View 1 (cartoon, rainbow, N blue to C red):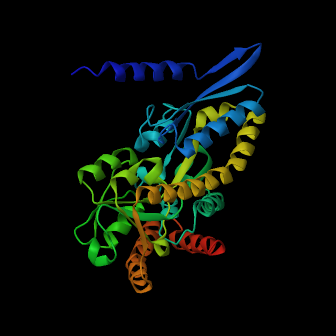
View 2 (cartoon, rainbow, N blue to C red):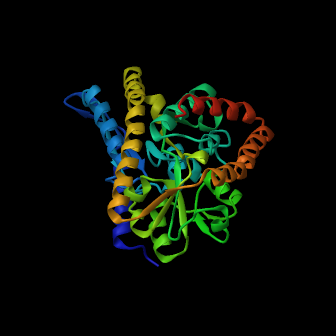
Length: 341
């Protein structure tokens, strides 16, 4: 079967763009053209932050660096984004570590349900941990920075007030959030955010574990009716912004300095963006008449106890691979405690 014309055109444009990713010249000055693959849709707050990051690099480099953004997974799909950077399909990439389960055995600990209070805190914590441990699992690219969303909530088609309500539920979850779902007694189904709206709409899944911003950013609030806040087991999903290692090594030192300094400055922008998006999503849910409720204290304690094995399993699995799983978990919990409200 021949691929649709639109798909052929997209592929052709991508290949042509990538062929132009080498240095060009403008007014006698070398111009470094780079492609940036992002899985978020074009209007998402994190795509907007990425565009501003790219514009700032172009401004500070006085036009010597130009970055073209490909949002919505048109260049590489969410679960292929990291490999796409490694292989040079894109020069830069932003996606979730969790979408490539098992490839990042230490970094996936950042997504554990340790009670993250908000996206800005989660982003700062994640970067502090990555810098402290410098995981070898990302050494095949140049990791510029990471960012992480606010604590996940349970958004559902039917009300979920207790562990009993979770029996028989199918819940969209990825990475460690899938293990959380399973530890709570429900069935986890992995899928990209781009597929979740339709899955909820058609009843393929009954609920989704997600940051509340997803309900607006991916429009999933339209197809759920209830939100259960679960801050005691607040997990996050950590996202990478990384660069092809060969392309990074080829950059002049002053350009590398610009990338590094702008990336450092953009950490809080991404974190603040997550917080603002969460607030906007909650306002939207109110407008749509959706119901949000918190778990009673006794029920919260039951949920917290149920997810303890998830923490232990991470530490044991990491240790089995020669990684400092227990120390990583202890340091992570210590970092989270600094931001506890």
